[in-house]
Image (cartoon, rainbow over all chains, first blue to last red; front, side, top):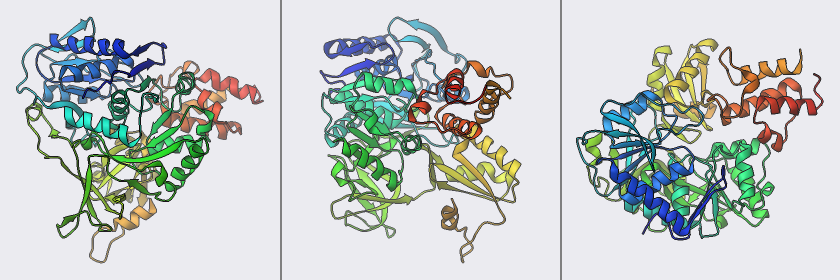
Length: 473
Length: 79
């Protein structure tokens, strides 16, 4: 299995350039060969939504070089810290720009060079402390709070298995044309790239996202057939009264990255169905490369609220409170996923990249839920306390630690934001606190709603009543 | 207050621009503050300030300060 099937195409919306078939394959091979000049070790790829970024990624994958896909807007200190901890052989995409893009200073022990194929690179002079495991293919930063930045280690087999399983679940074929509506360094965005290239379909490389004029111009000019979005994207599109019918080539809408309101799932399902298309609700996490389940289009409207059955090749069980694990229907507990796409494990430093498989194909998702008689998953919230803001996972416990100085506080997950209740805080301090959280966690400040409360509600046993606060959020 | 002056204030407030920003030259996604979230805030602020409702095309077309000013002139907002 290869990542780029023979009929795959890359279309660059900005220039209109098309790379298809043998030409695309040769271009990927040329990028793969480019990495032979770099010393051994992992590749760091600052990846904006550009054709060059896609080729550097696909080239590294073909060359068997583990590649970490990184946000070009990563804070300089975070990038510098990643370089120190992971000792990458080469940092590519040094010249990648875009809104908010920032570079750290050239790290010690690296040369700033211009490679004829890979572009501007930082190349390491010495070997890293450990060489990566031969199965390791992709590293993705967990979208978590900045308190504990780490990578998810994905094997080559896991990435390929997931790309093909998504293709099967969504019936992707060479006629599909997917625009890059999500960042490449985000696991969902990466999976759109992987699944379409593996299915021999077309990837329309376009920057800007769903509120940019250029994005929709590209969708129309190149007759894009699908759109991938997180709940926040669909909320925005709904607010501006966007309808899929504006772009008649669109046949498939997919949604993952958190829970979208049932009302909006049904709204977009009805609209896309009216033009003969389909809406797919999906569930995944970076640790599963990332897709775990997909609700078949005919699951709507009847099974609205479910994220569907496991992808082909995967399976769910439920780990109940008493420690028993089963696939019995209607038992609520922590969902456990097993499949060929489960990560090898995490990495917090270069030594971890040498590790083999720590997971044995099993992943405790940290999500509560149950299975129905058909094996469809119904989610019931997080086991551990995480929130999702615009598809980015934040640890609520970490947020509480960050705001503790301002008074007793509880953070709960609201619709696409985190609501922080702080005892006795005044309006001005609340504003300032939202700003600080936004800066610290690198999430837009409207993702934080800091509210004063007189006291935190308590349960009879004296514990904080999170449910009551969640109801307020 | 002239339209462009009012619009500058709306941009500066909605996008929380640092003082001294050259508002007239701003384009969508040129600066970190004018991302998709900033855009939604900006659209709501423009609608409030000028008493207009922007349709889907206008929200998507509103890609620069200049476009916004022209859009409001076309909508009949007094100079």
